[in-house]
Image (cartoon, rainbow, N blue to C red; front, side):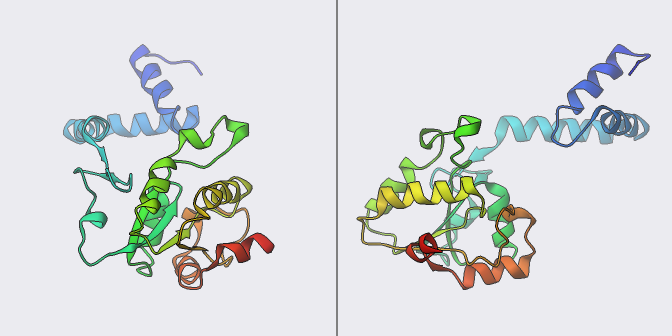
Length: 205
């Protein structure tokens, strides 16, 4: 792809590094921004700069937040004895959209995937285990995507806390095997939370 401007080429190259964005799509987006009023482009640039520089991760659940604690963890109406374990912020948003879950979350920041060089030490697993060992949590819901990596992560955590006096469950398999949680419709996902099953049962299926 030939460019008449080095500035344009640099912008397209940077934009094309985003997931799912090829060079042609990147060029279309950059040209679109050039056609917009200047202040709109600068507002986008400022928003991206601020989210990168100022965003926080909740010190309790690792959800993305503007403050030390996220709004969910700060909410006194949430059930602190019920923790839903998810891969990332997109899963929190998907479950919250169902309005079916009233507990708290624990965001792992990924899933165990030896093929990608991601091990337990790269995730927020140790803090979850320590949280369980305080004895304040009554039930842990595994809400990882029903993929091989998600199941591996669930089982690893299960082995770490199986001797603790805690109920462990997993979302019902209304979510098709191999699907990512964020792409599941709200009704199916909500029913999967409500119809969760004991984790030990899922190991036998």
